[in-house]
Image (cartoon, rainbow, N blue to C red; front, side, top):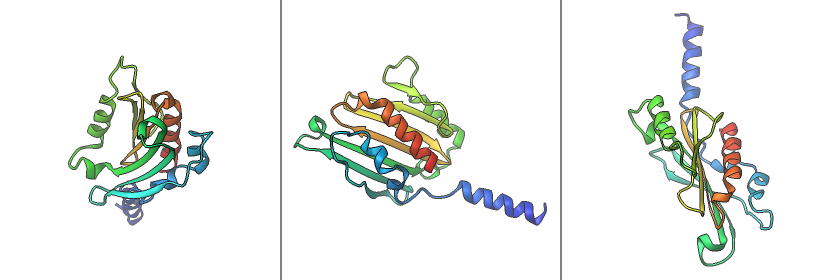
Length: 168
């Protein structure tokens, strides 16, 4: 093996094993998030470390007013996690199969999303929730919305996942 081939191989491996961004708020533009709430002001996202050991970081956007979260308030969370740390010892193919397996055929509120990363799915377990997840560059990317009409915003949540995946 030539020195150039070895260096190229190591560089490619390093690129594939990059850690998730520590600020997932950089994955969506403010205007993209604001489009979810045309009649309200959406402030800047607040980033947090979910688990440093698992390479999991989140960004939370909130808007609305009132005491009951699901009645009048919205929360949008963008989460990025290192798939190899979330599922140690599990192959990328198995992680992909597991993710795709969550979108059961014939289920109205779950679907495979084509053209995003290695695999992507949408699901909604309640009328107030929409969630889109993808395996992208060795990371699990999740965009989850909770609010009064969360499920009705399926297309927007999938659109945000696609935008975030392009910036990952």
